[in-house]
Length: 348
Image (cartoon, rainbow, N blue to C red):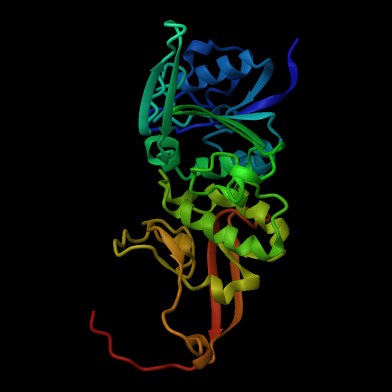
């Protein structure tokens, strides 16, 4: 018999995924279809699902009508619960697209100290191998370049990662105490840049919520999106989870409670990619640009500039694309502020 529960799949779509749920394919997919018609990554995920004794798997391409804005508006707000409640999430880290698959990949670990073989003088057939593995190179796994997959990993309670270096496991339901050799480090994949408290979005101490959010935002803004209009959607489930503790209104990627500080985001580097052609977010939101962003830190000490200029927020509002889905896409936004006007000359 099969165990209860279901598997969720996190993977890179790529540009060639054509076998998806649409109004035209819905009837056929509901009746029957051959597993061999599916992209290789989904075939591999089904193989693993069966091997671990589960019957059901959730795959976005096959569980959300891809040509229906109405169905997307209904299903996307549920993604937080899907990944949180999945028995396990399969993360196809090494597959650059849905057509590539991941089970055929041969692990290629790298080392800071290459393996040293010490032969057992009493048993020629056995040897002791000593080595020191190199830190995990996240850029070597294509999934870490994609924006959508970031929140899927952060929200999963348990995950198995099929990486370039082999298998990695995350189990947030049973995290060992950080003492002894693990003191100060996250025992779950300590080499990932978003380790530590970020691996446990739930039950974050209130005083740490903002720093966690800024770390998420920074990492997320450095990832790629195929469709610029997904900028707020692809981080919406993480924002929703953090918002449960933040207890603040969410305004196109910014928290109302700390809005004066939230507005002080800045581009992370000098390479300005620009804004998308289509509307994504109001210009005062970090989501409106395609460049990586960081929190702005002013140089020097003394009275902050906003205090000198009497800066204050009068009102901030956004119009949601899907009414009631506060963490999703927006149609428009407005920001009203007060303060003294200062004249200056700008010579770029």
